[in-house]
Image (cartoon, rainbow, N blue to C red; front, side):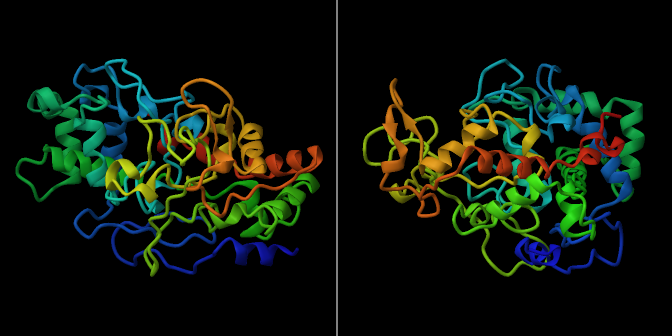
Amino acid sequence: MRAVGWVALAGLAACAAPEEGYVLDLPEGFPAPVIPADNPLTAEKIELGRHLFYETRLSGNETQSCGSCHLQELAFTDGRTVGLGSTGAPHARNVNGLTNVAYNSTLTWANPLLTDLETQMLLPLFGDDPVEMGAAPGQDAVLARIADDPAYQERFAAAYPKLDAPVTWDTTIGAIASFMRTLISGDSPFDRFAYQGDGSALSPTELRGLELFYSERLECHHCHGGFNFSEASVHADSVFDAALFHNTGLYDVDGQGAYPANNTGVYAITGDPADMGRFRPPSLRNVAVTAPYLHDGSAATLEEVVRIYERGGRLVEDGPNAGDGAESPLKSGLVPGFELTDAERDDLIAFLGSLTDTRFLEDPRFAPP
């Protein structure tokens, strides 16, 4: 199919960035993200946020920053099976990547209530189950470390010139959120092929994988479609509810669709049995560098993930989580299973690799200051 066909399937939206104030450098074919009216972007705020994102003094024990768990070269994931907080305690879930986080309709694996970065950031900073940054017990002292630093005094004054005392938790969170909204990736080989008119940007192998990805036979694009390769995405002109979550048949520990007790998905928030095992479909942009995969990091490679979907769910043969997810009564109808030859599987994985944006992974604007 011609490139224009893939542009259409990718959900291209012709939205302009705001005309006033700071203007994001958006890739070709990308809509403008939602920017809160009470936290507009400015260059000074973004630069302050970059410093704070990598600031270990924001953790209770001064050992961890946001950037400790979100590494640029790994598309702002951490390469671990599950996250580790500043106290060393393991978490139940794999670290979410921050590629194009400004477009996420919800901001964790399975909480439909967290829809903006400013609110979501309260959890890693102050949450205690599990501990991440661990700032809560001595939050005044943690903030004082920043307020007493002359360099930060200058940066906060520049970012919030109308405030007499600009160093607060609200301004700290607002600045980090502003920086995170600039983490936009859209210069992969796929983008050069689909949006920038470079018909040679994808290899024959990747092109065959693209055909498979968008086929009704595999149905990948139903959950991982649009410009962000996730249907759980929003932008400034969105008109539909994109708070989407799916049970993909990874577990069935009781024959009735149950997931492990520490990882029940949206069910943990709503208590609705229909929400058991439902998780947000992440963006597939830069997916080749974000292993391990799935909400609990239980798949080591992209091939393993593809084989789970081929089977229509995962078989866990033994142990406390034994069960056949393919037989789960709660599994999404979008995971029916399909057959691939070895060559087709290789093609599909090659296409997923074409979503890697090397410039994003190396961009000095996003690196530690």
